[in-house]
Amino acid sequence: QQLPLEMHKVRIIQKLNLLPIEERRRAISEAGYNTFLLNNSDVFLDMLTDSGVNAMSDQQQAAMLIADDAYAGSATYTRLYNKLVEIFGMTYFLPAHQGRAAEHILSRSLVKPGTYVPMNYHFTTSKAHVTAMGGEVLELITPAGLEVTSTNRFKGNFDVAALERLIADKGADAIAYVRVEAGTNLIGGQPLSLANFRQTTEVCHKHGILAVLDASLLADNLHFIKTAEPGCEDLSIPEITKAIADCFDIIYFSARKLGFGRGGGICIRDESLYRQMRGLVPMFEGFLTYGGMSVREMEAITVGLDETMDEDMINQGPQFIEHMVSELDARGIPVITPAGGLGAHLDAKRFLPHIPQPHYPAGALASALYIASGVRGMERGTLSEQRDADGVEPLANMELVRLALPRRVFTLSQVNYAIDRIAWLFSHRDLIGGLQFVEEPEILRFFYGRLEPI
Ligand code: F0G
Image (cartoon, rainbow, N blue to C red; front, side):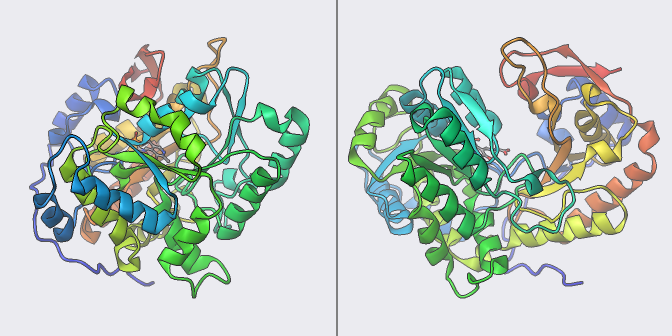
């Protein structure tokens, strides 16, 4: 088997703690069996997310020193704006402090009560913003996307026929916009093919419906198109990016996935749409030339966007994830296949068949893995769902523990440590029991809800 090979070297390090197991048991109990509530000083390998925790490059650090401090019209903003125009080819840009702030602006401007927002799959914050405006999210993922184990390389694909049927059924006017999520987060960081981006958005354009791309996880998706889509092997990463961007009216993103603590924004093709949304930026984010970001962040994002166009910079994440998934799979541990972007995803339904879904198997597995290893993962299952208008808790399609691999942060031996501990836990899975809420917040409950063993 081919091992990943890093095309970078480490020049700054952070010392880690590996607490004794008794202290890990105490820490997770104090955190209400919710890995979001652990202190990072109690965590050995933080695989909670790849958001805001990716390693920065020397070029990004250097760029931060030349940031141009100005409330309005800083040269830094102009550099960021020019880079976005170069990469995506859209004339207008609205900056925001992170991805969900962009979602807030979009849904506030475009979602009316009773309208629908079809998506290949929802993301927690994107759904919360649509429903907060009285809209309804409809998930039109191709059936392959919900198969936990598969050999389909493009499991994130939008079900184009289902979109056609929906438009015929509800009418184009009832659809606020179509949201396409590159590197579909909640089903295992699964990519869409360039062909599918094109087919989905062609349907939108035919019916005069706005096509919106969530590009937060686009970098991994670019890698998969380049390496696995027939006919794309000779396209450069910038060419693939431009081909995708050309399909859309709006592209928004969280820049936290690019290696910074903050940042995001909305690229817009059409001037009238830009004017429609523009007023919300000074109201909620900050002036139009920073939108809640610091100039240092904007400088680093500009360089990060450029580095995302370099295959050697974006392939490390997918290669490490591929290694982790294939090693786990070889040990008989249930994981989402094929390996996607973002991280490795344990399938808690098969890992813990003795725990019923209302007892949150994925939440229980995330807690148990922390106790067994000091590795912090994230529940991506029923806990991460929101109750419907009648207070009924929907059971998630998948019960996953996501082990994110922040880009260029962990070494292969650390990944191998995690694999070894997961294998130990799998052979002792009878020890794990379910969880119940002791404190359940109404909105985005998975972030700060507290639980206890049943
Ligand atoms: N869209 C996608 C696909 C995301 O993965 C995220 C964040 C957002 C939007 C929201 O962006 O965090 O900057 O406000 N995903 C993080 C994660 C939180 O851990 O998966 P944000």
